[in-house]
Length: 122
View 1 (cartoon, rainbow, N blue to C red):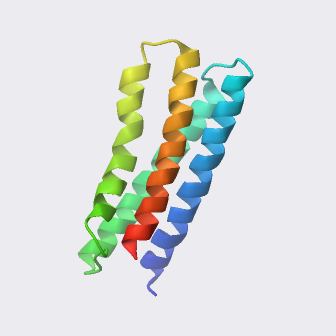
View 2: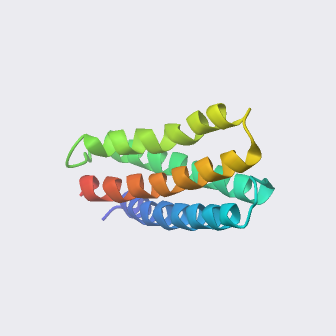
């Protein structure tokens, strides 16, 4: 297994676990009456960087001639990259508490996309 493929594989697991933790953390904060704050926002930015790195590694594998089993793999990856900026553009003018709930649910959705990406990438 090439180093880039190994990194792509391990980073997929990292993205999955990271977004599960951030999503559950956000839901817990929401249940406590909290609103979006710097800590969770920073974690979401870190998560977005991880997803972008995952995509860059996937592009390197594609250039090297390795293809996913189905092109749905690319759809899941593209959706994972685009969804946080889309939600940010929707939430930025809304109440911070509502933003926390939406970001938390989207983090869990991205974790689901990571699972689907791992299943379709084999």
